[in-house]
Image 1 (cartoon, rainbow, N blue to C red):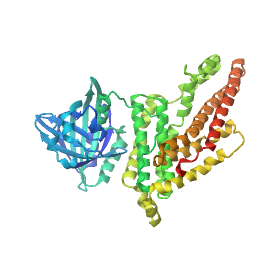
Image 2 (image 1 turned 135 degrees about the vertical axis):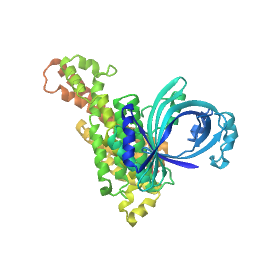
Image 3 (image 1 turned 180 degrees about the vertical axis):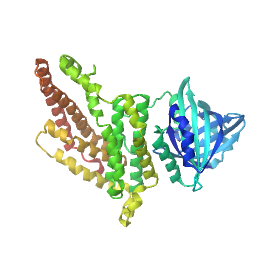
Image 4 (image 1 turned 90 degrees about the vertical axis):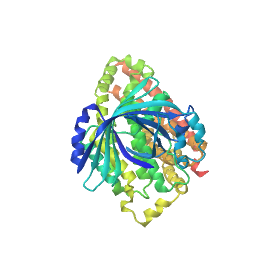
Length: 507
């Protein structure tokens, strides 16, 4: 068995000529291997039994020789992929599962039944260029450039990937090579394997943006340190997923999901302050803040799009006021375009941030200044302390619940970021508790947060109407006041509902 430890990058044709010189500068010696044309077929059963186990089964043929490969469930952290891998030669291009050692299979897997139902789902065919690097310290790193395509059901996607894999030696040198590549090339750290892309094509299930950030999959057996790791990895993966979604189908709401993922990462650093010293994360926090600032225009852009969408009631009102409609179009025109946004995601600063998060997570950077208290706190069972962490946040939210007077629009707007932050604690820890109780508790709070976003939209349009004297704008402002009053009434009902719901972590 081999364990892959590799970083994947998505590159464009334009950067390929620069790669050989860069890796030559990095290494003591570079061995340039002959290019190969690799023809690969991926197999599963009609019910996707292997996929359900996160097992990849592939045959690969090159120069008249074939092998079969099984990749078991592993771990992806940022761009770092680690998976157990088994390779065996075969005759022909159909897998022979009985040739693998029976001990590699998860308990209870019916290998013979799976073998009888295997069929080829998709293929990946590409030209692979390979370089073997040896560093001054003796670390061996394999660099491969794959150019070709993945195809299934007459659908095709291009492959243009650079992978660097640790063959022998120090993982830190793999990260150093990654840093050199990022500093010199416009590229992106890759999250999805060729197999993952092939499954999406085969099942006609394109990558879709999430409607909201989902729960971190914590287990009651997790320690506090393991919970931190899971929360950070969840946030990083969420950001990378939606970065890829944006390149496939640009959308403002997809960008909003990226900011949600960044916020979850930042919140995790705060939530687990018992084991994460603030001074150890100052640079990471600064760079996360930078990324949020780069995307700070997104919510306003969503509001402007709402104003000009025929699906919304705003459209007809605004079109009756040409002066206001022109102001909105002018504001939309100065928002960053798709190319400018994509440049952020191929920038050195953004990808170094992802790499730094990956390194900090895989190397457990939070341990660098630990004392005995942090070691003891890290070993605590997360379920035993989750209620305490949630209760701490709840005291802030109680101030909103216990206020008997009706809140104004400005008061709700001032609470928006605090409410969002508190509900992120639920995203981090909520999976430890009963799902129905959690959903019932969070529902009215989510309604309030959605209401505050709508209030922002109404308030922003009201600001655009100010300073202009016309009958059309006066009518719009009266309509906005009416909409605001109606919305505040609905939000007050949601706030009243929160008074009667027992916090789910107390059950």
